[in-house]
Image (cartoon, rainbow, N blue to C red):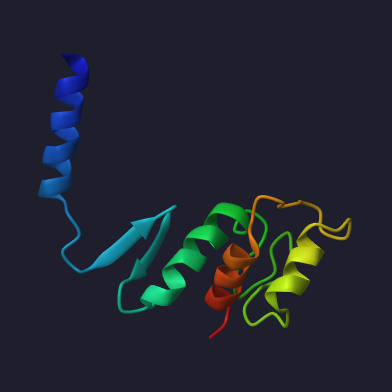
Length: 106
């Protein structure tokens, strides 16, 4: 019963305070739908899930800024799985890495 009430309250709250200005909320990041194209959304999801803990697009954090990095998908895959990169990502396919690269390009 408590679970049902909680779910109903969450639905009511989401309807009451819904985004009326077409914002896309995901992983703590707010982007307007117009601001990011559909072909870059998958890359943004992957970037936020795998890269954003150490990297930002436009400023140095733990790692360097990644906007417009000069790598292709194969070079990125080799680098991410090398000892030079502190975190390894063998689960990312070449296609997923390509999506991340598309997201980082302007």
